[in-house]
Length: 192
Image (cartoon, rainbow, N blue to C red; front, top):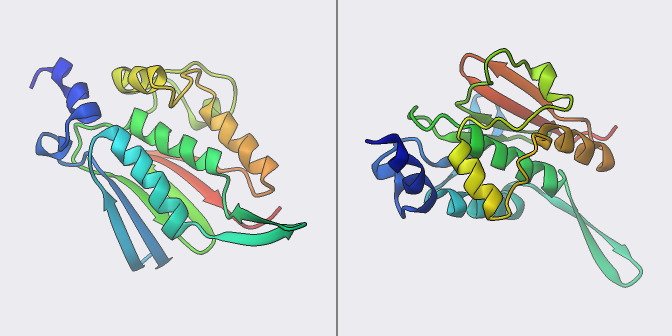
């Protein structure tokens, strides 16, 4: 298949998995690393996957506590929505769709982990992501379409934004890991 045909299929086709085996998202709730309690798969084009994944995460997997301010009910989730959204969009923009593995989101009682089959740009390290850096997505056509659609800003500040979102939310900063199998973002909900 011609490389120019890849991104329109992922972004707009009703069933991109007909062409790319791992073009979907898996979400699982784990009691422990070896005990999966339940799971969901999110299919469709990239826009549908992003919208459905955020909905499923915040209705089924990520809990909220309810408090009252005066007469108004106030719900506070375990994690900041902005940081989770950023991690999801980063996973979508940087995923290696040639590999047959879906984006995986593992939810535990005390943490949430995003994993995707991705590669850092040449000569980049995880430490570089913790400072000001340019936007250099693995899939520039996907990132550009998400930018034009208003989903992302394309400035390379997502990793720093996630850290600041968590600090404001009063939970630990996310941890980033990169090894030969892909890129990991781990959020912990225990209070500072």
